[in-house]
Amino acid sequence: MRIFSGIQPTGRKHLGNYIGAITQYVAGQDRGEAIYCIVDLHAITVPYEPAALREAVYDTAATLLAAGLDPDRCIFFRQSDVAEHTGLTWLLSSVTAFGDLNRMTQFKDKSAAQRELVSAGLFFYPVLMAADVLVYRANDVPVGEDQRQHVELMRDIAERFNARFGDTLVVPEARIPEVGARIMDLQYPDRKMSTTGGSEQGTVLVLDEPAAITKKIRSAVTDSGSDVVRAPDKPGITNLIEILSVIRGSAPEEVEHEFDGGGYGAFKQAVADAVVEYLAPVRERYDGVRRDEDALEEIFERGAEKARTIASETLADVREAMGFGAVRPSQ
Ligand code: ATP
Ligand code: MG
Image 1 (spheres, rainbow, N blue to C red):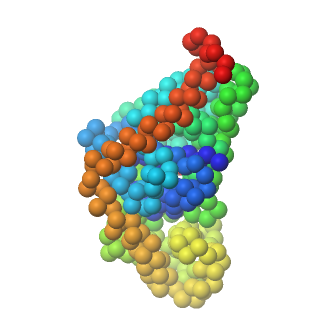
Image 2: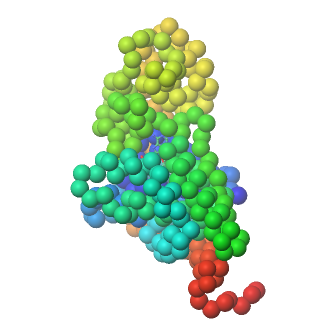
Image 3: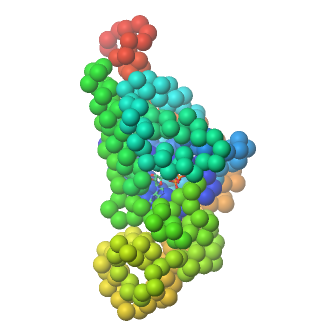
């Protein structure tokens, strides 16, 4: 079992990322050969500052390490250090349908939010993401619900490649948690909590102080009722129920039952306390890890070396299948 996932560099990783992705990454280390990267090449598809990007890569790396990624038990690296990702991207473009890219909802949402340039990179992003996974021949891709469509696309790309050029790539599967795969913005519970598109007050950051977390959760937008139950017309309360049930590892029904008749105030306070306690270990470990940039660079270097060993082999096979270079002697 080979697992791959990527996460965008920003110091603003949030509770949705933590529940939907980061906890799965940590668990993946016990399930198989786990490969994780900070996808800095994806971060340039929207406006950004070069100096801030460099900082954000360290911030995100430190967050993941503080959350429990262990460079001795997984391959952890920075995407831009492994040139095979971009090398494979162009080759895969020949088996990617323009019409499929045109249907991606993330592109529609993110391009609509741009005030100046809508970059071609934002449109082409899913092909780079396909290359990220396919270059490792990974089987298993832990992601949140919002990435389902991109994983479907990479499966189509791999299948089309294999049909056209012979069996070369592994067709991966998305691993999406049953509860907590789509944590919503606390202020706009019809939108997912987001690194780049969310509201300040509606986004609980992994590194937020306890008082800030409590304030954000206590002021979460809910309906005018008082029943702690999940329902399509109660997206705010539904979101909080899901959050608490993931943290406790219990069914949402149990949470509903426990807070039945207690009102929203007590329920929100209980969610706030649980989230504070849940994120505290990461925040406590973070500073110590973040401070030592040399150590982070060393981790990246070791990770990139291991990643390259796998990625270069796939790329060589892909090139050969597509008719590039001399035929390699068979082993
Ligand atoms: P952006 O909104 O700018 O795309 P993001 O918050 O989605 O940023 P990413 O780095 O793109 O952050 O996502 C990292 C992982 O977190 C992905 O696997 C994604 O599916 C997951 N994820 C993102 N938002 C949520 C959410 N609200 N709930 C659960 N999982 C999420
Ligand atoms: Mg995203």
